[in-house]
Image (cartoon, rainbow, N blue to C red; front, top):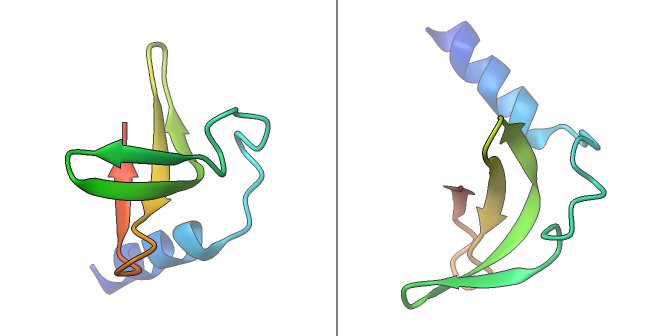
Length: 65
């Protein structure tokens, strides 16, 4: 289990350029009353992208689809 966790941490902290050309990277979006800065694409499928986003006020990270 710890190997899986280490792998996930490594993935999220890597400077992967996947989706770097995506127009949402760097944008700020509002979800409810929370503003999130879109950092990078972490997954993509046939119908959607999943982004890593950060709340600039708290520093917390979220997955955003």
